[in-house]
Image 1: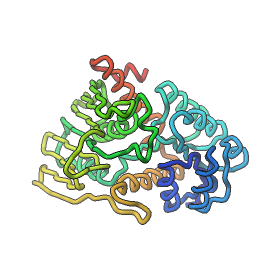
Image 2: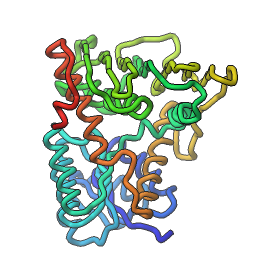
Image 3: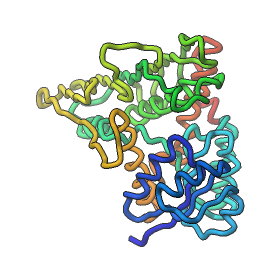
Length: 344
C-alpha cells in the first residue's frame, strides 16, 4: 500500500499519543504539523522529527499536498478546520467532542459530504481490544440476543492536572468522557430511541458535572444504563477501564476490573484475560487508551485505501453526539428525551 501523507493540527496533551501511533501505522506518515503555539509546535516537531511546521492552518493547506489531516485541537476550532479541509478536498479525522453543538456537527458532516471528502471522528474507546473482545462474543451468538447492558466508568482519578481546562467548562463528564461510554453502548446494543439522565457535581472546585447516570432504550429492544463518575474513590483505582455487563437470552458477558472477561453462554462459562497490549511507547494505566488510538488510526488509513466508510464516520457520530445533547437536555428537564427528534 502506498504511504499516505498526513498533517496533524494541534500539538497539545493528547496529540502526542496520536503522533506515536502515526509513526507506527502501516500506510501513512505525518509530513507536517500545525499549532498556533510555537513552543508546542517545536516540541512535537522535534520529538517526531517533522520538519514542516506551521502556526497557521490555512497556510499549511495552501503549501502542502495532503492525503489526510488529523484535527487534534480543542472543540471550538473543529468546525472551521474541518470545513477548511473539505474546501481543499482533504479527508479529515477529527478529535472528539466533534463539535460545540449538534447543528455545528451537522454542518461539518454536510460540508464533507458535499465536497466528497471522507470524515471520521476520533471516537477511539470502542477500539480498545477489551471492548472489541466483548463485541466479538456478541457476534458469535454465545449469549443469544442481548436485552440489558450496563456500561460503567467510575473513577477518582485526577484528570484535571493534565487537562486543567476540563475544570472550567459548564459541561464536563458527559461531553468529555460520557460521549465515549455512550458510543460503546451504541456499538454493543445498537442505536438509541430514548434517553433519561441525571447528573451531579460532587467536586466543588469544578464548573461542570462530574457524575452522570443515563438510562437508554435501544431501538432493537434492549435497555442499558450508562454511568460515569470522576468522584468515585475505590480501593483499587480502575482508571481508565470501562466495565461492561451484558445479559442475553442465552447467557451473560462481564468485563470486570483488571480486564477479566467472563462469558456464560451456550457452551458453558469461560474466563479470559483480555488485557490490552502495552505498546513500546505507551505507559500504564493509559495503555488501553493509547492502544485504541493506534487501532482507530489504522482503521482510518485502511478505509481511505479501500474507499470504505469508517465505523465512526461523521454521519455515524451524529447519533452518538445526539445522545450527549439528549443527556444534558434530559438532566435539565428530568424527563425522557426522544433521540429521533434531535436527529431530524
